[in-house]
Length: 277
Image 1 (cartoon, one colour):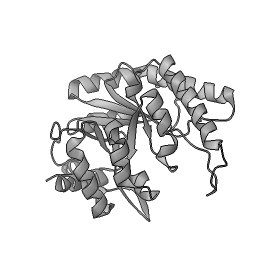
Image 2 (cartoon, rainbow, N blue to C red):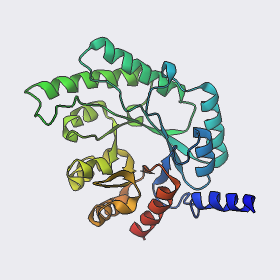
Image 3 (cartoon, rainbow, N blue to C red):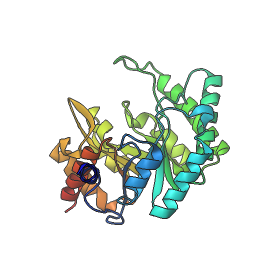
Image 4 (tube, helix red, strand yellow):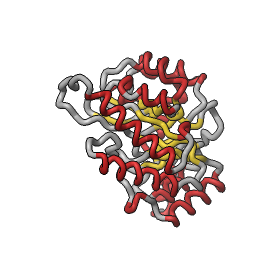
């Protein structure tokens, strides 16, 4: 009886059916759905989805994941017929004022990318952080200086990894995306559109889809409201879901349901199905 209950509980934590190859885009979710390691999450989820977002919230020791992990993930990808996109660390200081700090951060990032090149990776998503200004408008020239520093670091990553610019996708954050847009254009980078960031920061979703949709390699989609972030997709306002649904038929990249529990994943898959039906 106990074993039966365990199996029933495990079944409730898995997607209800396979979504592989169902849409014109690759559908996936994060590597942290279950309270387990990368291998376990990929093995469970890879039977149902096209792609897994490998999350590196912090830089691994030495800037590289363990070789054994990369080898195992490559084997799982081949066996399950999946791809990966890799979310690079959140706290990168690629536009730091200190030149040595920028070079060090860019070097670590390039090493992480190089160490995972044996995986079937569709995109490396990167944060180009802007120093928090406590609500203040940046002084004249500050954005331009920050932009030049960021461009130098991103160029160094591309040259050192080496990685095609199209495999590096810059994610929109709290600041207006137009601040970093010239660098994206100059280096011919891809874009990761995080819908939740756009909504929670009060940015224009329709304009972002129109201006950057053609460069979008990855879309992060999840529910967000006053009390919760990265929740089930059903938390998102209907008008937002409608705008995204209208965009998706022309999208051929990776749509990641960026949630962190089996319950939120199942609920988000149900909402997505309704959106696109």
